[in-house]
Every structure is written in C-alpha cells, then in structure tokens.
Figure 1 (cartoon, rainbow, N blue to C red):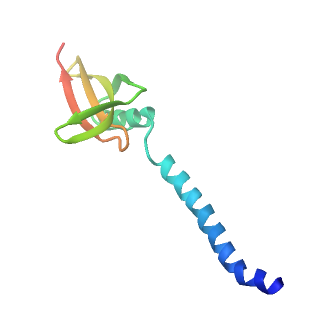
Figure 2 (cartoon, one colour):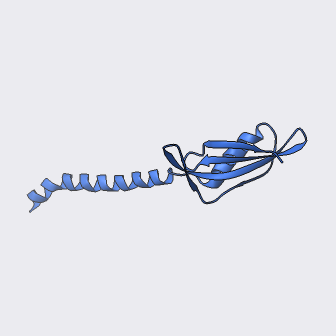
Figure 3 (cartoon, helix red, strand yellow):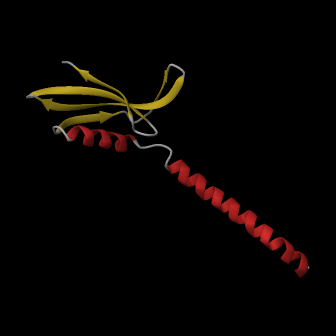
Length: 110
C-alpha cells in the first residue's frame, strides 16, 4: 500500500496544485475584468482638470451595450461640466466599460 501511495503522490499533488492555481488565476482575471463607473469617472475628471477645474460630473451606474459597425461593447455614459472663458460648458461622453477609454466625447452647446 505504501508503495502504491508513493507512486501517485506526485501526480495527486500536481493535480491539486494546478486546480488551486487555476481558481486563483480565474479570480484575479475576474477582478481585473471591468473598471467601476466611479473609477472611470475619476480618470476622466482628472484628465479634464489638467486644463480647468471640473464643476460637476456624472456617470451611469449600469453599463449599456452598443453596436458600432461589426463591434459590440459595453459602455458607461456620463458628463462633465466646467468653465471655459467664463462660460459653463458641458461635455457628454461614452467610455468603454472594461478599459475606461473614451469612445465618444461631445461638447453640448447650451
């Protein structure tokens, strides 16, 4: 019995180690999968604040799925307000839900 146990011990340890490692890798990838809306908004606000202070900002908390040409992606919609030349100017944006990259940015004329 001891001889048989010693034969399968390395195999058993290898399988268990691989299984546990796979679960850990899966958890890490799931955490890195999507930025939160607040993280995306903070990144965009920081970019805007390099020029002038941001007065107000918002972002949707639920992603929206859009299709542009052959590509489908989840996005967050949001907006930024700031003063430019003593006038309040609004911008609306669409940001990729996974990377936070701005996909569309429009200045809204009041």
